[in-house]
Image (cartoon, rainbow, N blue to C red; front, top):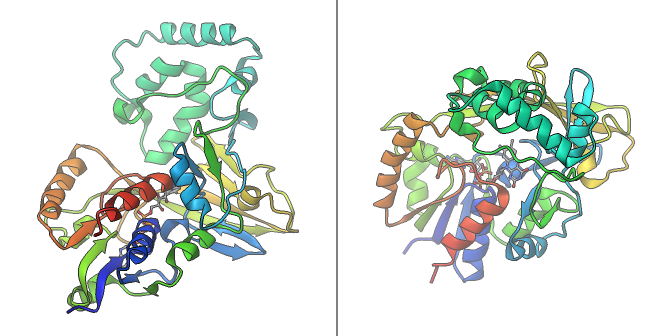
Length: 366
Ligand code: FAD
């Protein structure tokens, strides 16, 4: 007889939702995390009364009313609407690409005129069968949007020239022919009132959580404690990297507290020039309409990933996809381990997707 029904490795969104649902069904759970806090990448630090998104800006959005109601049952969400700006050579552009952006680029006001400009740029480029990301982007949105708003940003993100990146990275580049700066098309979006930690606390209420413990440092002991394991760490590490290391892109965040109540007037400002080393500046207070005297901003620098850095974005190229398949075949044979979340599935997941996945995987608990 083991002490717990479930050992949940990782107190991120996947682990927290799974543990919450299992507990609701009368199961006992022990949640462990190697970090000194729960919440995984949605965790916020409080600085000057401002919730600072430590692992990058997080905006919750979904089309699924069930998921919206689910998160709102733990903490009420505000009506923040993501409408990022882009700066290129000191000129300001609205995102996503919409009639405001087109007016800023060409001083035209009619959708018909915009379509004509874009079509003529695409035609002039003569690209018929795009061979790389640059050609793909130009064939979708023309040269102006590509050179001013896509090229530099994408090259910083991937650390490579767009001509050396595969075309498949960009399948579509949505353009909106209305004056609408709302980044997401989803019906619901917002930020938890009081911050994301409230969501984590709500999910993990009454559940035993142990922090600062790495599963791999005493694996046998942890395994002995529960009938089943919910594993949300890296799948390649779970199998001792026997097929090799899955690769990631990483980010470095530089946080600064400033002695002003408003630095940039918007939560998210992208810097699309290659010469500026960061991709974005986040001003956290604007996610919650903050009125504090000070402000906290974060510069975001894309990084090559290595063992010393956080693994943020999976690289879904051929090599890593093939390696992942090998690991998944092993995972499929496990009877006592459930793999879930962005690291165990090596998949970019938005928050609503990770919650949906955890709800689905926990729904089979008897
Ligand atoms: P994580 O949050 O990474 O949780 C995994 C946990 O497991 C971590 O706490 C880790 O410490 C722990 N762990 C790992 N290995 C071990 C071990 N060996 N022992 C103990 N503990 C371990 N989503 C949105 O919907 N909107 C956004 O705007 C958005 N912005 C994002 C911006 C960035 C920069 C990034 C990287 C992601 C963003 N996301 C966004 C996605 C969102 O962060 C994820 O969907 C979600 O946090 C994933 O939860 P998870 O539980 O799968 O993983």
